[in-house]
Length: 423
Ligand SMILES: Nc1nc2c(c(=O)[nH]1)N[C@H]1C(S)=C(S)[C@@H](COP(=O)(O)O)O[C@H]1N2
Ligand SMILES: [Mo]
Image 1 (cartoon, rainbow, N blue to C red):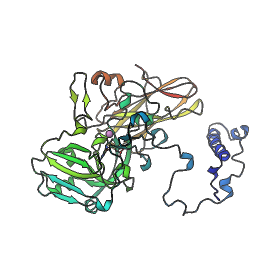
Image 2: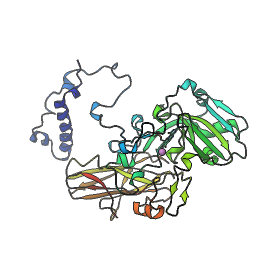
Image 3: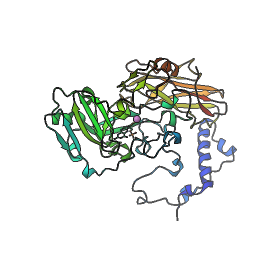
Image 4: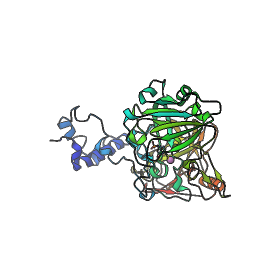
């Protein structure tokens, strides 16, 4: 017999209402719950009546069943076939700066490769003194480092280039995640093989059926790139490239090759598919920007947002969101309640790490009137997040990638939130 109270819808409702009553009690008086006819605090509930599951029940812990709606989701019209796929991080349900492993958005071009770590090999060849093949155990014998970085797909917000389309920050901004990677510097691996003086570029290739390949300038490869085998303290998830992936801090997600199998050193870039027909930005002039590696300064309000409307009515209000920049730390985040006319400085809370998500909050009293919420991030290099119109003026009408424009959410008097654009 299960004694988990969640199995009973009636107690679930009571629990949820009880939670709200609890919050109201802080704001008003302890009598508020009783005045509303609430008994959840005075009556003994099932969870206090019976012992719960023992420690054998959940060898690998899972979120509360009440959180079952907090999941990655896709946009059906974006995923036309079964192998080319993307889903989105539920940013509106998360807090802090770390994305839980099971909620990190996924982007893969040939499905999830299921690699046997015993059969994992990483080959280093090309313009090197000593071509080498490493096992996973070999990689783990280099000095390990722990680094928190965001990964953003260059196509994040890509559907919004021509106007407000998708109703939720999960879909407009959810191709980003931020975890702590454990791994080794790429530099150690390359030094072991001995890069020759003419070795100026590196080709990274994945072991999946898409054989994802990208050219990386040697300067970046020798700087802060890592080969990671753990995320948030445990082995990488298969979705994220188990057993090893490339980490290319601040640069577009496409370069973070998963299931990394091959590193070739060369004297020029390879111009493979993902850096020519994809991940280049066709301008109005007909010319294309290429090698737009850095993910520009960006932010989004995650709550309130279309999937996280205001349910508590007017009064005390917490607005929150995320900011990030491929150029380093976030210096400041401004928030506007009136579509960009007036700006207030938000409060960044939690670690402020280079090329990692930053969490911001802005507390205010909502008077129940319409809001046009915007956030604007400024990074440590002084770069300011542009408006969508400024971006369109600079890049023309053809773009998909690198949309870091300011997002607007309209909040109506009922607290319902919608993706809009104002110009
Ligand atoms: N081997 C391989 N690596 C890959 C991909 C892929 O399909 N195969 N997709 C790339 C793209 S386009 C992005 S945005 C990121 C997504 O990383 P994630 O799935 O951990 O979110 O992985 C990159 N690395
Ligand atoms: Mo991507």
